[in-house]
Amino acid sequence: MRKAGRHFLQIPGPSAVPDRILSAIGQQTIDHRGPDFAKVGLRALNGLKTIFKTEENVFIYPASGTGAWEAALVNTLSPGDRVLMFETGHFATLWKKLAEKLGLQAEFIEGDWRGGADPEKIEAYLAEDKEHQIKAVCVVHNETSTGSVSPIAEVRKAIDRANHPALFMVDTISGLASLDYRHDEWGVDVTVSGSQKGLMLPPGLSFNAASAKALAANKTAKLQRSYWDWAEMVGPNKNGYFPYTPATNLLYGLNEAVDMLHEEGLDNVFARHARHGAAARAAVRAWGLEVLCATQGQESGVLTAVKLPEGHSADAFRATTLEHYDISLGNGLSKVAEKVFRIGHLGDFNDLMLVATLAGVEMGLKQANVPHETGGVQAAMAQLS
Image (cartoon, rainbow, N blue to C red; front, side, top):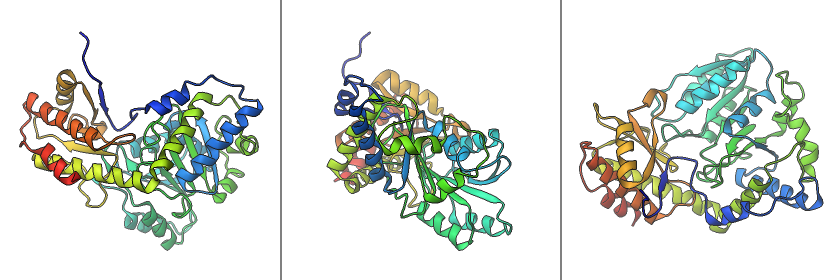
């Protein structure tokens, strides 16, 4: 039976695609070797630099964020290299597994999935590496599985205090264009991101922003690479082209997305996400439930992960809410599967959409017989005002 109204896609990405971007993507495909495409390619490459806040190279791949993870590693490292990572959640764990499959020695600093990376623990770990065998430190900026944000600038300072030469790599797949991010200022060597979160595009594009230090490492790195090789990209990119067929129509959409972000103003975008995160957390606490991120100041403006009481299935709650109110919420992943659900509040999203989303959640809690207090929506509205 047809359901009236629109579906609420409130997972933490892919986010809903604005009409302007859909219209841009719907333009006729052009010759990716022709002169007209050079304008599209250069605009995309230069526009992305303003979002990463970098003057360095940004590489664009037709791939998911997983591809950009792999590109970051294979372009800079050699078989057997030690890599230090921090266990912030499911996606940090997946990046570690990918590194191991590539033949790297990936080492975890254990975390409890309730906060971001701890700079002091990273500094202490690096200080023990007297011979500088660790070649890279990899941190997830916004952990999409938990709703926790790592203090990237502080991690950079920790690496510097340890006087360690390791490359600094950051995954901001769900943070870019939603949370403040500064590739150059924060001294990041490789930043990884994707199209389907704060950039408001469909899945299909992924990115590496690379420092001069990272490009130098590319010249001596021994891990096998072909499709991902930055060296093959640098020359064509200077003129707006790519060494293979790019995702032409997604680049149209990317250029529109960059325009939209600057029309609103990046600082306003970041403030909007922070406000929505605070309002969502106010609702959760008013319901008498618990936000998964327990570290004050590290809560995400991109999403809020909510713990359900013992004995109640988060997936069953999500299914009930989808059936009755046509709203999709994010599921718990690996260690927190069935224990949490995630409310996405990112991308092209405003106050009224948040209030409607939280109303759907509150009605779903009642429909699914999850113990809770009423008044979460009112608490959010009070926070927004």
